[in-house]
Length: 330
Image 1 (cartoon, helix red, strand yellow):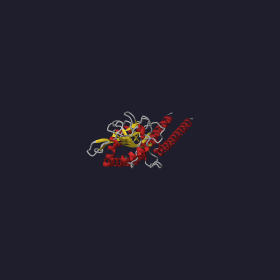
Image 2 (cartoon, rainbow, N blue to C red; image 1 turned 45 degrees about the vertical axis):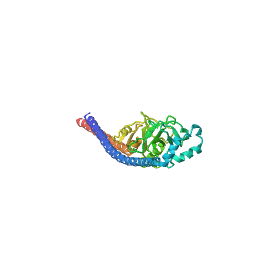
Image 3 (cartoon, rainbow, N blue to C red; image 1 turned 180 degrees about the horizontal axis):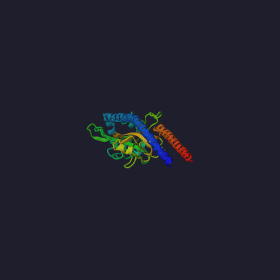
Image 4 (cartoon, helix red, strand yellow; image 1 turned 135 degrees about the vertical axis):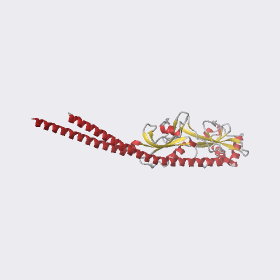
């Protein structure tokens, strides 16, 4: 019995040492892998954000230059002050719309639509005929960017009540020769264009295992969603994770966390202030740590085999000693 007790203690100590050693190796190696993965993802994140910021700067610089042209403000003032504005009955007169649009709108930017609005927010002219003569609130539903003060602005994504997709509208004051505001130059931007910039060339993943890149923003006062989904049939569900929360608060509190699906990931994230969005680059830990999980299992299996082999040997020797003692007593 004493021998069995001794063998059991040896087995317990051996199994404990095996588990401790295996977990220590696993933790050390996964920490190294996670740090390397984070560095790769953070470099990719910075490149993607830089690509977006350069695009944003080119877009708005082009718009600022265009609406500052005397010809643009002159033509806009003529249309806005004309008693012959386009009416709903003119919606299907595409020639008339194109003729007036060509005089005041630029054609060198990739946006969903361009509009000319009165100071009261009425769409007087638009490349989207369906909104001509409609009212567009100039506050809360659109981002006001003043070319005289362009450095501080935050784009506002809103969930469109009709399409149920995030939309992004911008209005810029148009001023005449005496610096009087005569109306607004409205842009409806394409969230999918921002999505493409953030994604880059997605035909080939840049990292191994492959990364997931996406951008999220407030699309209502209480809901955060992706800014765009390639599959238009999928609903835009509210998303929540520690990384998203920390991103909007501009806090970086670690690179291992649970994503919005509650999956353990290694992630890099950053807040893009001008777009009011958080961009995330994530990879699942079960893919990154796959080899280390296999190594952990191998160490545990080998350790358990050795432990039980030692246990069996000790039990066997104990039995042999017991038999020997009994024989000597006889």
